Image (cartoon, rainbow, N blue to C red; front, side, top):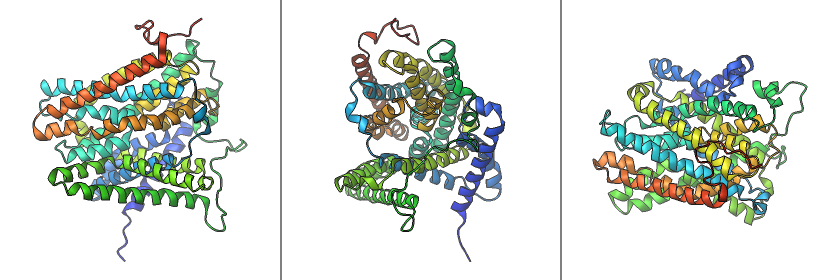
Length: 472
């Protein structure tokens, strides 16, 4: 019988790597010391497997990239379907707006730095470099591997060869900045007295990633359906999958309408598929709104949706690293190292600089989390925050979730314009490239004004000091 095992083989290989990585985390002090996520370790384990072993067996990497593409949208849907925290209406200290400002500033700063470095490179030592290369910095660092791959694949159709792999490689370098430098920032904060001594660093459960047999097990999800009728996780999975199908119908309909406008409309419709995660999140917002209006919100458990999103993110991160083509990494090694190094140093200076002036409470905790999400993903930021706040008792993570919704709305024009530099390379003119530069400058201006309003008198105090200590 001719049954296809392709998706099962991919899932099985990724699962095996995740299990091996989980075991290694319990044994290797290096992984424990730097709090390296298991998905990151698993991805690096599979990198040579999918680059050398699987092709020798006649297996292509492209299908793995397709899996990453869909898992990104699924993770967005699962998180967006969650209910709005009740604390949202009680926020009066400006922390949510401040967090959104820092996140938005990183999109703008990383885009501007990346684009300018790319301009220097293709104007001097690498004349054939795609003008879109610099935007892999905010895609890989501030947004994550899923977005970097999805949009990169769109750029490949616009002449940027290997853009998907380049985006994934940039995201992998961002993870290294997040894990290695992030933990160093935590230790620096303890030494300088910005944080209390961390007893949690000796917490073996946190270091190894495995809860001891005699420990109290936290509740990961709650049942909202009777198991006899339908398993609660099956129900939540069905809601997420149903929403994903609706997003497919929505984007297909938009594509059909744009197709009526001729070739330009068809080209735009094609590019929109690279941003499927945006339309998936928008569809999830609509679905959640309808559920709330029908007063059926009690049927969805936020923790269950978080577990589904976590599964998607773990498999997505592992798969995205395994899908990196080392051939293209070798081709682009110079711009990758240049942009990622200077970009990482920029993040290392700007995030602490802004956070120390814009926040009034939990300043270092907020900075650590924002540094993590500005170089990795939400899971990386939460992992770093957990070192300081093991049970997430502070409002830092909750404020971030609220700010993410605000940032998402503000970032839509930025993401919709993100293909402009690739169009510049395809058309042989730098007009669209400089338009994107101006857009990033516009976001920089917004971030600066927003920052000045929130930070008030502290905004530009001691500008040469990376971390402004609290007023005595």
